Image (cartoon, rainbow, N blue to C red; front, side, top):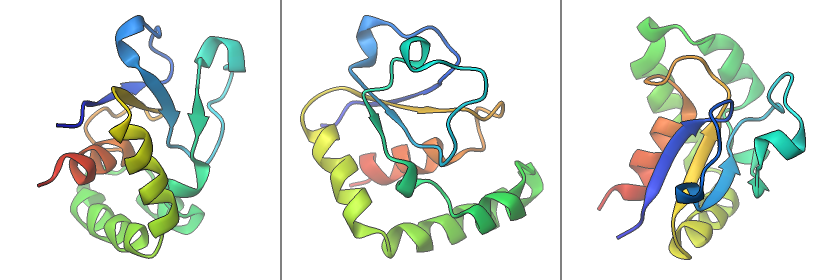
Length: 116
C-alpha cells in the first residue's frame, strides 16, 4: 500500500513527509531550495502551461480540468512511472504551490497513485 501525502510547499517540512516531490511546473514564488526541502522536482508531470492557464484555479472548471489533466498524464507515461517508482520506495509527499488545497494537480496525482 503506497503512502502518498499531499501538502502545500509553503507548509513546514517534517520527518513524516518522506520523499518530497514538487509537482508544479514553476518553482514556488519566494521559496529557496533550502526552505522548500524538495527531494525531486517533477516539473514535467505538472499540467501543461495551456491547461494551467485555462484552469486558473477556478473550482467551477475542476471536473473538466481533472479529465483534461488525466488525458495529459496518459500521454506522459515516463513521468508517471518515475513518480510510481518513487512512491514504491516509501512515504512520498507531493508538494504544490496552489492556495486551493482541494483543487490542484497533487490531488489528482494522489488519487491516480492510490487507485486500485
